[in-house]
Amino acid sequence: MKGIILAGGAGSRLFPLTLVASKQLQPVYDKPMVYYPLTTLIESGIREFCLISTPHDLPRFRQLFGDGSHWGLAIEYREQPRPEGIAQAFLIAESFIGRDSVTLILGDNVFYGGDGFSQAFSEFKGGATIFGYHVNDPERYGVVEFDAQGRAISIEEKPKTPRSNYAVPGLYLYDNHVVEIAKNLKPSARGELEITAVNVEYLNRGQLRVHRLNRGFAWLDAGTSSSLHEASAYVQTIEKRQGIKIGCPEEAAFHSGFLSLHELESLTAKIPKCEYRDYLGALVAETKRLKP
Image (cartoon, rainbow, N blue to C red):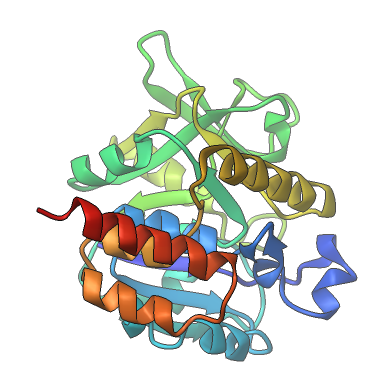
């Protein structure tokens, strides 16, 4: 499976911060926002990535990630000249996807906790898999409705009267048919190719699976100034309390087997003296200590 990170958009809700850098390059506590979705996919075993952003912002992402080889990854880049819906990503990245299945994650979503994602990735065989997360304000999101047996029976985009409190967060798994489905979509009233329309098509085909995420799972949408601050505060609290880092690509790549211990140690030595380097250095030292 290949991975797409959609990091485009105008970032208008974060103005004037986005005059300096794109939304997905804003800091969430101690790391750029885009580190978090990247790490989520690395932890799920994804190694080949396509990052989609605006022509203006792509050079900054290239500067940040390069080709990904230093993390044992392969990262390509594609332009999204105009934001015309999440599902547009499958058209932009068609040549990258090729004949493979694909997962798409939004660049402003921060996830933490539980094993819901790793289980969904390991069990994925085809069709589509999305997630349901209980929220207080479902009218802001795509909303999934379940029947008495827990099966998804409807999905609506930003409904005025939501049929449940289960929002669909910004991580989606699809088989290769998603490209064909995206090509056949008609723009919505907002003029966008809606990801909800893709999910509804899979639902109508009887090929949609919805994982409900448990209460111990955290989903933070860092797309506004207040939610960006809340995400930073959350990450800081967890990191200080537990002594771990959330959204650390180097650590995720090492645990996923994309980096050897020697490669991680060499990579850490190139980082300037800072808390981030200290953390990775401690990881290297602890791994050596536990090595038989």
